[in-house]
Image 1 (cartoon, rainbow, N blue to C red):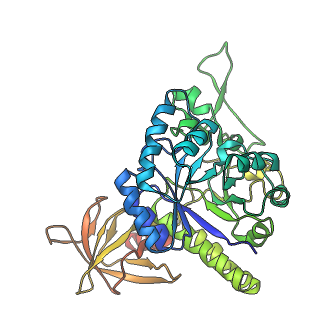
Image 2: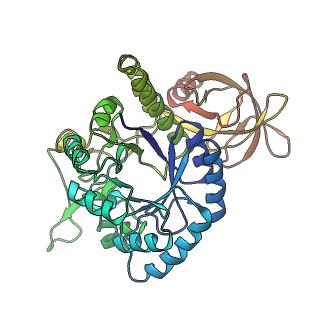
Image 3: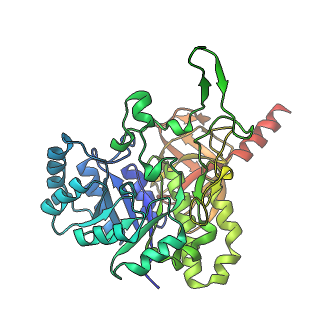
Length: 419
């Protein structure tokens, strides 16, 4: 069996640390330029260095995205950026553009290079082309089935690696190449500035009757005609392994630490359980599915892996997420008295029940006993995001534990208050 990698996204230094602690074998991040998530916080050079050091101390790799489709004006800046990468030294660069790839080969001849899904990698001939150019790994196009990936595996060199998405948001456009954002608002999705028009609601206007909006219906289900469900392959890890995939990739460099911790921990356990015993993997399936359902998602699909997507893989009546849990914050420094410091992400209140989510798979229900602000003043609640707080719970957590609240508990408590 090939060595498997769980590859987790991170849009900031804090989220990188969360990914590492919660089970990633590797993390992919973007710098301040040339990645396809321009609206993510992204990493300064110093953040990259700190994040890579943190990951390497724990045996985890870090890959940096440089996967824009470059224009002429980008190429000189790409050269300067890759010169900086000599000092940063990530484990690999993820690239989609052949011109950018050539620059990386010239400036960083010893750097491992991966070819992004944006490069439309749909056949073994393409994989062999990139292998001959010096690529170590190619990310499969989203449009491939597991049967096609297996055929690619059988026709490429043994030492070439295949990376495929296992979880996360799906793009409606071919291999993620989209012009909708460019046409509508002048922001180029292929340069990292996508406004996600695939999630918008559409109507039709007849040319001679401006202002008369006729709704777009598909089998009377609604108007969000481009809005895909999210990919989830938690039930199909054996098939992905059998297809010869080396790296299981989670989508989501714009996601919170709660999302990253949830998917990393769940897929880590599922992969490890299967490698230990297929029976253990099957026995724990309900736990995996329940945990995956605790982060935000848009309903799930298996994408193209088993057949061509049809109307059941789209969500026509809404573009909103399912949200069962709210992210409260991540435990930072823990003090001798059992209290700890954290940056608050969402409102929580003294006396309420929340959950400590631990990297080892445990979820502990605890009561909020005390909240203090930076001045040490007691507070009944923490309503303002990004407050630095000192908190005490009924049980002492550890650094990097995630605090979250069930939305069902919140609804129940609200109902009791009203009654």
